[in-house]
Length: 224
Image 1 (cartoon, helix red, strand yellow):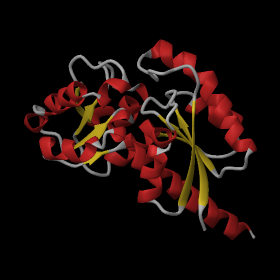
Image 2 (cartoon, rainbow, N blue to C red):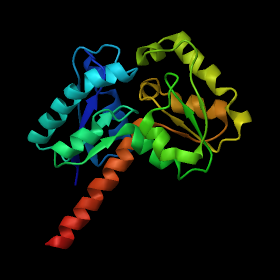
Image 3 (cartoon, one colour):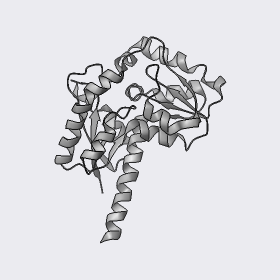
């Protein structure tokens, strides 16, 4: 059985191929999922601080409700800050999965001491809350402010430099706290630099979504 999942991209993307990139990453890792991607409007730089997150929330909720009306089995909010995820869960009946909480939850299966590669200064609140005392170190690329900066050569180089000290910090695993790293396929590069496993939030959200949907299927079957 193949499940249909709505993916909310929290950045305005005009190019169809770019819009569907994260969905293809999830489908490639989990063929049981079919992903339909849509993006919020009028936010070409995405979410990069608390103000831009608040502006995005009603747009995210609108897309979540739209996906539910169209009959998807679950919705993923494609952002490590989990914007509007809590609010959406109160409004719709389908599971709503945030990329940040998915990645932070899975990373604890890898080790006790977690390093976080952020986009900006702050580790997303949801990631910090889940990791708790397991958050051993957080780093960020110098000069990067927007997720679109990661698409540039200098932005990627800055992210690579930010990871160079990670092996000295004694972490067991690193989590990428921005889905923009997924866009540039950064996890493999990050593993080579950090010397430890790296959890990418986009496939992590797919893993959690599939687990939830399979669990729901078992419960439905048991209820018959």
